[in-house]
Length: 328
Image (cartoon, rainbow, N blue to C red; front, side, top):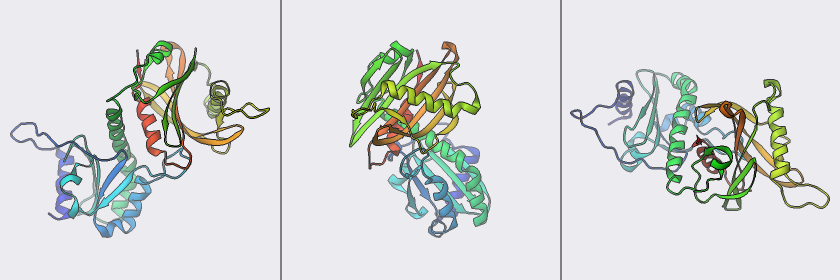
């Protein structure tokens, strides 16, 4: 079957839905693949030209908030002729082609489950690239949502049974059992797990509902809050004559986005942290959750220290944990 015919079939599935055999449910094989991997299926000539560059521009763009460049997805490129057998079970698949019509679509569970398959086609190179530019954000979100679900499924096999978050904050998180409570006080809990060359960390605390005064000072208030919490709760190695603790990175402004966690409005903050008197640091991901029912801002932050190692998937795990938030 040639590429054009395959793409045509996929577009048809996207438009009208997968067919059923006599009304019976079709059971698909389980999808496979490493977290944040993406199978890209397209003609070799397209891959080596402008279209391939456009795909890499969006789907291999650097992850925001890391202290070294790492791509959104690890791309596994292949021509359509080898997209068969086990590789069809890939959890995230992107088909791109030059066709006799312009189409963009997203379909679930085509060859395996759970699976997201995106199809982009155009009659010219320029039209394909325009479709990629127009729909990449939507497709990336669909892939990322699936990967979050997969990550959560994997760590739910063995969860931390501590009740400290419920007792202090009235919340629960699905936290893998490898995370242990490191320290806590009346309004602060720190959990961490050891990783090669460092540690992954989760902290939870609250602030008054009125802490963030205006939109114009929001970023400033975030940085002040983090530095204040760090000075009290996240100390570093002792420095003679100096108090050493975590602060926000001085040379990088954080990226702030609107978000929703557990059905509540929130702000997502991605940035870098460092110690104020010691050369160490790394990325952090924070959610500021507007918990009006309890007149508070609930703060959940994940950060990692692992020098000279890739951190994309570690930070992704922390994001997946935070997104399991439930109010008890």
